[in-house]
Image (cartoon, rainbow, N blue to C red; front, side, top):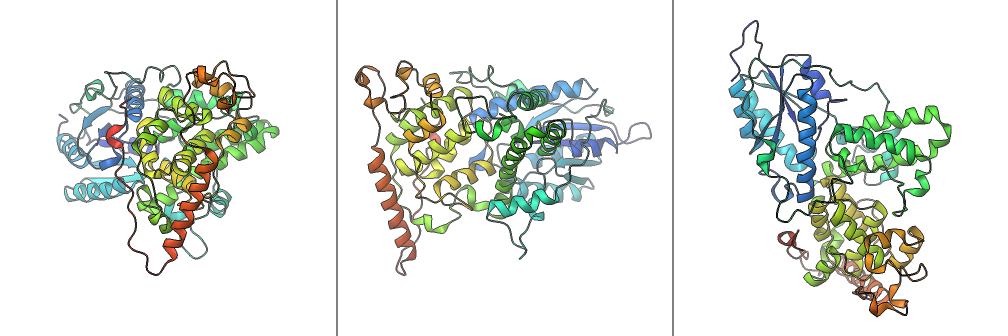
Length: 502
C-alpha cells in the first residue's frame, strides 16, 4: 500500500480510465500528471449499466485494448491497476488504500454513467478527496450546442452547422514520455482473470485477423484510411464491396483515438492535398453524426428504450422469434441482408450502408421492434455504442429525431444492385451464392438452378411486406391521432437471452 503523505511521498492522483484508453490527447491524464504521481485505474463495472452491460464482442475488444494500454503505461514507468465491481465501491476502496488526493477522469454521457459519476463525486468529497472531470470523447459537450431558443437540436443539419462553425482545431495534447509513479502500488486483478474472451465456443476467431485493438492500432487504422481510402471516400463510403471506409468506429468508441485527433489529421491532409477536401468534409460529417447521437442521448436519455416519436408507441409490431433468428443468423433469403449479418457475426463489424439495409429489413419487412435489433447489435458489434446504436436504429425505424420517414423502405434487391453491383460482397459472405452470375446475384431465386444452391428462399415477399409495413404505419398514425386511443403498446420482451446461441 502507498505510505502516508510525506515531503518525499506526495499523495497520488487516481486517473480513472473508462472509454478513453489512450495516452495521447487525454486531458484527465495530462492534467493529473501536473499534480503528482498517478495511479492509472480501470474498473469493470457490470453493475451500474444494467441491461446495457458490455456485449460479447465489446468484451473481446476491451480485453485486448486494456492489454495494449497496460503495455504503454509500463513502457513509461507506470502500471495499470484493474479491478472488477461497482465503480463507486472500487474507487472509494483504492482511494482509501492509497491515501489518494484526487480522482481524475474523462466524462461519459450515458444516463447511468452520469448518475453514477455524480454519486462518486459526492462520496469522495465527503472523504476529502477532490474530483476533476474533462472532455476527451467529443468535439463539444452536449449541453453547449443549443438552438436559438436555448433548446436541444432535433435536426442534424443545423446542429452540425452550429458545432462545426465554432469548433477550433487547437493543438493536441501530447502523450507523456514518462510518468511519475506512487511510492507503492495497490493490488490489481489480472486482466485474463476477468475471462472477457469467449472459450466454448470461441466465436471470435475471425476478429484478430481484422482488428488490432489499442492506441497503436487506432493510429495505424487512421494512417491507412488517410493514405488509401480518404481520396474517393465521398463516393466509395457506400460500397461494402470496397475498402472505402475508415473502420475507426471501435477505436473511437473505446477512446483509443478521439474526434479532436481525427479532425486534426483531416485538416493536415487537406492542407497537403486540396483534392481531398470534399472527401474529408464528408467524413467529418460522419463524425458530426456521432456528436449528434450523443447530443440526443444526453437530452433524451429515454431514447435507448423508448421511441422519441411517441406516435410509434402504438405501432403494431410482430413478436416472431423464428423471423428474428432468420435475420440474426443471415438466413432471410435476401443476399445483401444475409451477407451483412454474416459479416457481423464473423468480424464483429458491418459496413454502414449494410447496417441501414439490415435494420430496415428487420423493422419494416419483418415488423420486429427496433429495440430487438439494437440489442443484437449491442452484443455482436465491436463498436457497440449506446448513443450511436440507439440513434441509428431509431433513425431507420422512423421513430427518432431527424429520422428517415417510415415509408422509406429499402428494397434489398435494388440496394444490393446499386452498392454491390458485381456481387463481390455477397459472394464473400454468402458462399452458397459464389457461383451465381451477376445478373441473378441479388435475386438468386430467379436463377434456373436456384433449388440446387442450398440457399434459403426469401422469408417474406418484398412487395407484400412493404404493403403490410405501410398499412401498419397507417394504423399506428390513425390510432395515435384518435381521441379515444388507449395507452401505448409496449414492445414485446427482447431476445437478449438468445444472443450467441447459434
